[in-house]
Length: 225
Image (cartoon, rainbow, N blue to C red):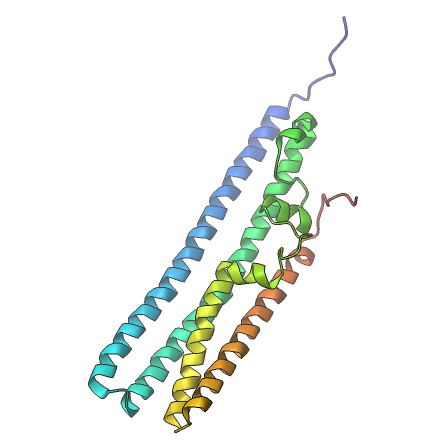
């Protein structure tokens, strides 16, 4: 009779510890998503309230000097909240990335205990940037993948950034109107403010993303093909 290899008596305890930590990270990811959506909803609520308030002021002042002054002040507050929201969303994305890296390391621990289960996993068990992106369902090698303009435009910080840039353009346009600029100059100033604000937001987002990989030293990197 063939003797079976000795079984580690601590396997069940190790699996229990790994599973407990896995559930903890899942709960953390859930909280991250909740805060992200909460931040966006707060920004949109402030924006909606400001627009309604400005509509009431416009009815009383007929888009005069008082309206322009109040609008610039209120939209500046909205702009600040929007910039802070984008910044916080980038921080939350970073936290989510760290959580995914932790889950990949736990998955690597599962496979060390039971390597025969590797064929049942669709997510990665490597804790470098490529492995984390694979777990997130993002292919970094394809055109239009992570880090590209098309990808950044559809992310939560990217979409909020477009709204924030529009608010910035409105502030610049109102300021130009208050200074007596002609209509074509108002349009050009507003467009320039939108482009500059959007480029700054995209640059900040790109800089934040570039820090993901070097920020955590991988222990189980993806093998080079």
